[in-house]
Length: 122
View 1 (cartoon, rainbow, N blue to C red):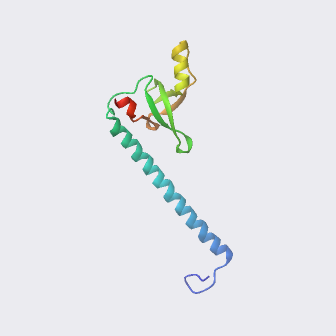
View 2: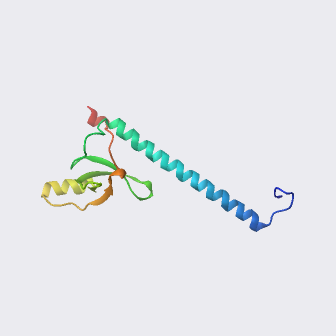
View 3: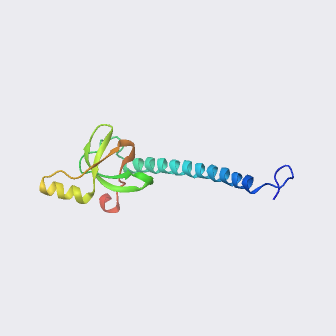
């Protein structure tokens, strides 16, 4: 294999070139993933048609967790810049027993309303 100047490249030079290409591709994929996530959030807000209404206790939401995983959760409390959320099962048990569920805090930017399902639209 030749370099741009007609000389053969060493293994180290070829490896360096591959590492640079890999880093550039990784950055591109991360940028595309972030753009896709932003688009999904915007679509959910538009589809819900309720983006101006504050989220309240018991509302079903989608949360973006570590690794960009989307999780179905329930709002327990609005804490200003974010929300305390819990699983649907924990919410159900807490409301039945009058106890506090185990909650996790998420910034408001990572919490969006769940789009309506066919059952909820009827």
